Length: 155
Image 1 (cartoon, helix red, strand yellow):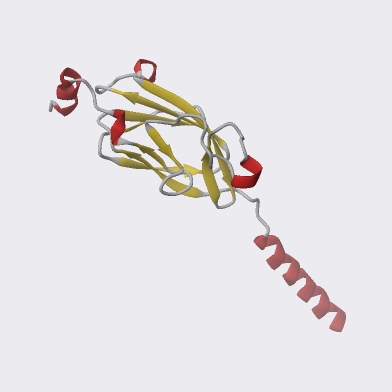
Image 2 (image 1 turned 135 degrees about the vertical axis):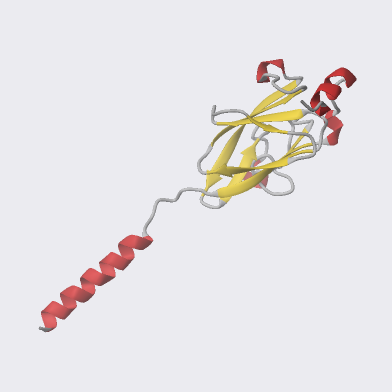
C-alpha cells in the first residue's frame, strides 16, 4: 500500500511538472504608430501588407524573431513598390523581450543592439517608446496636395 501511494504521488508530481514545461516562444504586443501624412504599409516576415493610415496606430505581435518591412505611400491602393520611403529591419523576439535590431553592431556587446545608431533610420523611430515599437514621425512629411485630396475623398 505504501509503495502504491508513493508511485501515485510520483506520477502526479511528474504530471504537474510536465505541464509547466513549455517551449520558450515569445509573445509581445507592440505598436506601429503613424504620425505622418503618408500611409504606412507594414509587412512582417514577408506576409501581407497592413496599412496604417495617417494619425492611426496598429498592434503587431511578435511571436518569433524575423523581419519587418515598412513602406510609406500616398493614395489608397498604392503598392509598396511605389513607396517614397522603404526600409527593412530584423526583429528579435525572445520570451518577453522583443525589439527591432538596427545599426551596425558598434559597441553592441557593451550597450545593447541598436543603442548607438550609426545607421540612419529616419523618418522612423525604432524601439520607442517601448522596445519593439515603430513610430513614423511627422518629419516624414505628407503626400502632395493632389494625392492628399484622393486620400480624404469619400465614395
